[in-house]
Each structure stands twice: as C-alpha cells, then as structure tokens.
Picture 1 (cartoon, rainbow, N blue to C red):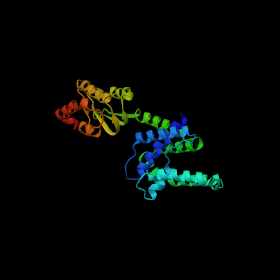
Picture 2 (picture 1 turned 180 degrees about the vertical axis):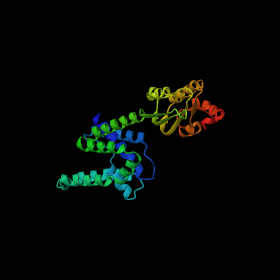
Picture 3 (picture 1 turned 60 degrees about the vertical axis):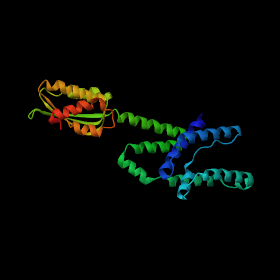
Picture 4 (picture 1 turned 45 degrees about the vertical axis):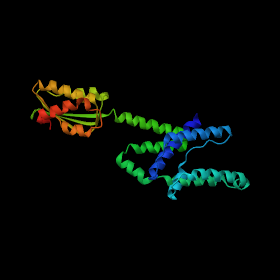
Amino acid sequence: MTIAIVASAETLLCANAVDQLHTGPRTKYDKELFAQGVGNSLCGMFSALPMTGVIVRSSANIEAGARSRASAILHGIWLLAFVWLLTDLLAHVPRASLAAILVFTGYKLVNVKAVKKIYKESPSEVPIFLVTVFSIVYFNLLVGIAIGFGLALLKLVYTFSHLAVNFEDNPQENTAHLRLNGAATFIRLPKLASALEKVAPSRELHVHLEGLDYIDHACLTLMIDWEDQHKATGGKLVMDWEELHPRFQRQSLNPSKASLSHRSSSEPVRT
C-alpha cells in the first residue's frame, strides 16, 4: 500500500509538472494510474523494482524538443540492454556519482522565478512550499506530501472561515459603516449578525464590499432579512447590489438573484 501511494503521488505530481512545461497533449490521469498499476503488478510477479513517473527524464525530453512518448519505452530498452550486456561495467560506476547527477538535476528543476511569482500573488503559499520540500528531503516523499497537503488544507479552512468585520458608527451624520474583509460564510454568521445588531435604529448603514473574497447565501439572506427589519425603524441599507452579483456570479446566488434585482431597481439608494 505504501508503494502504491508513493508511486501514485509521485506520478501525478510529475505529470502535472510536465503538463506545465509543454504545450502538447495533456496527461490522462486515470489512464496513467491504470497503466502504472498494471506495470507494478507485473513488476511484483517478476520480483522487479516498482516503477513510477519521474520528472527528470520528462524535463530532459522537453528541453531536447521531444514530441512523443517513445523515450519512455526506449529508456526501458536502454536499461535492459545495459543490465544484460554491461553488468560488470555498471558495477564500476560510483553510486555517489549517480546521486550527484540526480541532486544536480533536481537543483536545475527549481524555478526561483516561479517561487517569487507565487510569493507576490499569494505569500502564504511559499511557507507551505518550503515546508513540503524540506519534509520530502528530510523524511520521504510520502511524509512530505502528507505534511504539505495537511498545511494546504489548514490554509483552505482558515481562508474560508476568516472574516474581518469593522464597524464604525457616526451619530453626527446618522450613518454607520460596515467593512467586510475575507470570506463571509455561515461559519462567521454570528459575527456578522453581532455587527448588524450594533446599528442604531434609523441609521443609514453603508456596507463596503471591496475586501470581500466570498459570500454565501446564508450571509446574503441574513443581510436581506435584517434590512427589512431595519427599514421598519426608519433606517436604510446602502450596498452596491449591482456590483455584488457580477463579482460572485459563479457562486450560488441564484436563490436571491430575483430579490436582489427587485430591490436594486425599486430602491435606487443601493446603486
């Protein structure tokens, strides 16, 4: 099971990396794993070492201008020929030299520019990348991938549960401002409701959405229902509904689309 997990993880990672290095046909992951499973089953029957996809040969092929997968088959033929015909000669090759070639090849595969680009776009991704690399080198591939996956999962949970709510009240102008930053999901529904409860009756509440990355239907429903209650006290809700829907049109806003369209057309203050 360990060999299957390690080999599958390495093959998928290498296939994904190779797809990013060329513009040819994309990898068919199901077919790749099926072929690897059949091959490793045969390897087990003949007491051979398990096989897996590797990035070194693939990157060398791309740099050399290869256009087909024939090199994978030829690679096996060369290995068979050398092991069969040149066994004594291979025994004189120092293992340290082979290890040095692998280390140097791996070093060449490190794309510093890509790491810098990731840091500019999402700084939190770089520590996860560095910890994963260190874990793979210090422990092994399986442990390193597991640690990296766990860190990425924690980051995802934090991203979809973090919401900064900044409430400012301005009694002199009879207005209040609510600034949302992060992801407004049902997990932070109590926090959003608590901020809305701070709005005094008859206040004109301005909701700022510039820093909002995500909003789900539960939070939208809360604000719509709160608006109806707040109107009864003589207050108003000022929020750019017309901007909100295009920004999150890929999210599940359909249940409230008709309500938003009706409200924005009947009450111009929101637009």
